[in-house]
Image (cartoon, rainbow, N blue to C red; front, top):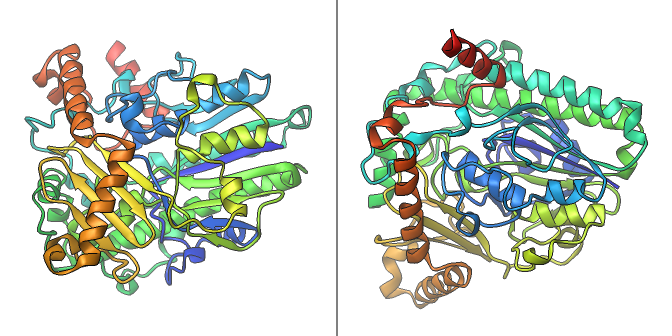
Length: 487
C-alpha cells in the first residue's frame, strides 16, 4: 500500500458539504468522504500550527515532546513516523508546508519539495512572551487583507498542487510503495481570495458567527486571549461577511487543489492501492463568540476535519469516536507494515483503519492543549461521549454538553451545584485529564522552558523585535528576505 496524507491549514471541521454545511462548496472532499470514512469528533493536539505539526510528526502529545509553541519547532527528534517509514527503505516525500525548524534537520523525508519552515529556524518569538506580552500590532492585518485577488499563499498552493501532480504521475512511483505528505496552506489567512472562488459566495448570504453581538464568554483567560489577539476590533458586520465569503472561497479553492491531486493519483493508476488521509492542522473561529483564527478550545478551533479513504475502508461511513492528529503516526505504520520503535510503546495514537472498521467508542478521550502566544496559563481540553471539559490552570473550568449545545454557548460548569449529572461530568473530566497529564506540572514546565528560550534568543526585547509577522512567509518570500539581508 501507498500512504498519502493531504493536510490543509486552518480548515474548520464544519466547513464542508459532507459535514452538512449549507453554504460551503467542497465537492472533492465530499466525494472523498462518500468513498471513505469521516471522523466527526477529530481534534488537533494544539490549536496552533507549529506545536501541532510536531505532534503530528512524532505521534506524541505536545507536553511529552515539549514543542510548546510557535518558537519551538520540530527539529528531527523524537523520530518522526516519516523517518520510521523511510528507514525501512520506503520513499517518503513532503510537498509543501511543514513548519519544522529547517530542511537541514533530518525530519524523516527522502525529499522535501517546496518546504515551508519557520522563519529563520526560530519562528514566532513573540509567542514566548506569555508572562509579559507586548501589544500584538499585527492584529489589524486580518481584516485589512480581506478581499479578492491572489496572495503569496494561493500562489504557493498552486505550486504545491502542480508539484504533487508531477510527483504522483511520475512512472517511478510504480517502482515501489511510497508515502507522501502533501501540505497545502489554504484556507489560512490572509483572507485574500482569487476572484473566481470568492464569487461563489455572496457576503449578504453569509451565516452569522455563533453568539454574534453578544460579546466574549465570561471567562478570564478567554478574555485575556481575545485582548491579545484582538482581531474582532477591526470587523464590522460588512467586513465580517466579506471575511466569511473569502474564507469559504479559499476553502473551495483548497478543495479544488485536493481534487487535482486526487485526480492525478487516479490517472497514475495508483488509487486502488493507496490509503488517503485528509486532515487540517486546526480550525478557525471566524468570529464565533468574538474570536478569530485559533488558540482556543471551541470546536471550530480545536476540532479538525478528518477523512480516511482507500482499500478496505468503509464507504460513506461517519465515526463519532474521538480521534486526533496523533493517530496518523499509528495509521502510517499500520498501512506500511512498519513496527513502532521500542521507545514509543506508550504513544497515544491508534490506527484510523482500526477505528473506521470498529463500532463507535464514546468512551475514547479526545485531547488538546495550548501553551502559546496570548495565553497567560495553560489550557487543556478533554472530550468523551457528549461532554467537553476545558481546564485552565488557576482558573475555573468550562464544561459543555455538545449533544444539547453544539455551539458551546452554555458553560454547564457554572450550574454544577444544582445538577448531579454536571457534578459527575466535572469530576470525570478532571479524572480523564489527569490520566493523560498533570496540568499544573505541565504548565510550570512550559513556562520554564519558554523562559530559557527567551534567554537563548537574547531576552524579551529581542523576542519583541525579531521575526515579527502575522503569518509565515512562503519559501520564495523568505528567500527574498534573506537576499535582502545579505545585501
